[in-house]
Length: 115
Image (cartoon, rainbow, N blue to C red; front, side, top):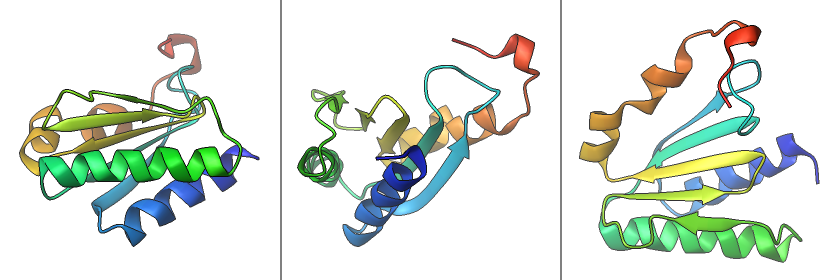
């Protein structure tokens, strides 16, 4: 499965499961950690957990067996790592505090791209 397809499936799955304020950031020429970062908000700690579990189950059903969840013990944040797409699911206050959108929205010269 190609990365744009994975990205679209993730966005649709988050939207279908009531995630809020879903945005995608193209990381090409910014970082070598992934091609895209998707950031979304959940409404409660249970919603964050459910979103991350639903997402991993959906991707595994499509044959992406290398997906994993980070932050299982956190009530404010989950990260789903698909290797090519990184998904951050935040409680709204934590999302505002970390402001990843601003951090990753700036253009970075390729020679300074972070690992």
